[in-house]
Structure formats: structure tokens, C-alpha cells
Figure 1: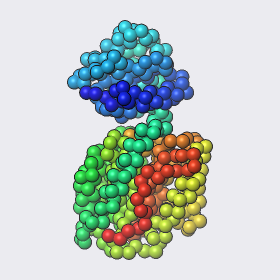
Figure 2 (figure 1 turned 90 degrees about the horizontal axis):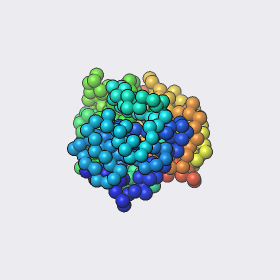
Figure 3 (figure 1 turned 180 degrees about the horizontal axis):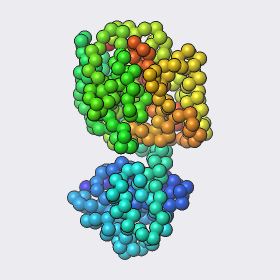
Figure 4 (figure 1 turned 45 degrees about the vertical axis):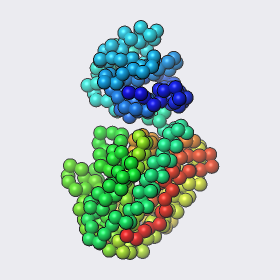
Length: 394
């Protein structure tokens, strides 16, 4: 297998990513990382296989590959098992690191314990945190991938109204949207961080089902079709007066965009229409306000103040249950850093990519509001999902 980022034509992109990782390593005083998770190997190699990426804070990284993948360059070394790694490092002139990172959040406990034994004299730190910090800031290449996602996701959303027919259930409507996504080239898989967050190809919320809390840490809930996946569409028949919130898969190339748009069956009540308008107004305000150096928590407070000024605070980010954030980082995984929540004192940095979703749940009508994925620029936020935001009628 040829790994795209390890080929000569993409080597500069690979070096940029390794440099981002090394900046994060230095903050945590790590001498090396041993990376084995699918998502981080994809980030570093541009493809997925079994194996381990070894990144020293200085010097050439090595990629230890487990068959059936085979080495195609001098930096790739075939192994049968990770126990071979220490001897191979010494053979290639590397010293054993005194402080090495392993992915505590991304590998199974048994694998972490196995890898610890490779470095018995080393202090072990959390490489998951290091890698998430590095991946928050996207390269030009990565943002171009996400722009492509946004264009293709928007193309699907433009066709959503054509697959609706009267008397449909929410799950029937979602299946038709999923079909459109796959026809457009969607991979049909959402990568999410954490073992306690599960979802299929996205979420579609119709009417009162939007007010059903979910145990997952998503902005909106929904009862789902079965207790084994309690989120999203529930089988409810779509009727006049109900809002239809579509928050479906935007992954076409290993990266993702997160976009929500709303439709309605017939007309929704005035409160729901007002709340949708408020959501769009919040996005316009944050697009201008949110620049490098802005405290992320102030973005949340600013949005919450606007909801209060519009008389909508009790419906903001939920009704029966309120989400504590209005946005999150997005990229290879749907839920990357940073989290746009009140207590986040971190500052925005240029080329972060963030999904902002100031949403409302109105009793009787359902969920309203928009979500866009943005790249943080010096002059404000660049919208990577530029599709019309008005409350459309089915």
C-alpha cells in the first residue's frame, strides 16, 4: 500500500504535520510518541493500516508496519509485533526516550499496557492530548479537503426537498437523504472521538422528538429507533406545523464538515420562526467577532446573550435538556477540539476549523437553527458550508 503523505510529492505536507505534532510534544516535554490509533495514523500517513508511527522530538520519524501492508520507503519498516520496535530503534541509531507518549484515549487498555513494557525505563505520558492539540490547527491541504466536503454536502442538501412526500416518517426521510449522500460519494461513516458517542450517518429531528434528551454529548437529542442507539429519528410521521432539522454526514474524503439546515412541513409557529432567525443572526455576529486571539468562552457567552436579548434563552441549545456548548472543532473526527463552551479560556488560533451550531428547541414545533463549519481566519470566520440558511418548506 502506498501512503499518500509519505510519497515524495506529498512530503512537504507530511513535514508540516510532523512539525505541528512536535510543537505539541515540546509543550508536554515529550521526547517521542508511539502512535497506533487509526485516526492518528491516517493523519500522519494519509491512509490506514495496522502499525505504529514513532515520532522523536528531533530526527526522522519511522513507520513500523504490520502486514499485509508492505514498506515502500526507507522510513517504513515491516514488523510482526510491537515487541520488535525497541531493537529496531537501536539498530537505526535512536536512543530509548526517557519520556514517551502513548494514546491513552484512543487505544485499548490492554494495548497500552503491552506498549508500556517496550519502554520499561521511560516515563509515559498521554499522546492523545498531544495529537489532538496538533490536529486542531489545519494545514492548507486539510482545509481544502474540508472545502470539498462542504461543497458536496451542500449539493446533497440542495436536493433534500425533492425526496420528501406527504405522509413520510422521519426515518423514511432520513434513509432517502442517506441515499443522496452515498450517491454524491459520502463514505457513509462518521468518525467520532470517544467510546461513549455513537451515531449512524447523522441526525434528523422532526417535531416534538427534538425535545427528547439523548445520553450522548450532542447538541440535540431525539429518542432514536431503538434503546441501543437512543438518538435522532424515532419513526414519527411528519405532519404540518413540525420543523425538520437535518444534520447529516459530511465525510467524503477522510475529513468532515458539519452542517445543519432546517425545513418545515407546512408552517411552523411564530416562536419557532423567530428562533431560527435568531440562530442565523448569532452566526452572522460570530463570523465577524471570532478572530485569532479571541477567548473561546466569550463566543459562547456572546451567543447566549443574543438568545436572551431575543427572549429565547429558555429554548437555547435545548428545552428539556440544554447542551453546554454551541460548537466544536471538526476535521478527521466530528468532535475535535476546541469545544466552544463558557468555561473554555483558550484562544482562537488561525486555521482552526470549528462547527458553530446555535440551535433552539421550541415545544410543539421542534428544533430550529443552522450549523456551519468555519475556518478561523485573520479577518474572521470563513464558511466552508455555504448553503442557504432560510427555513425552507417541504
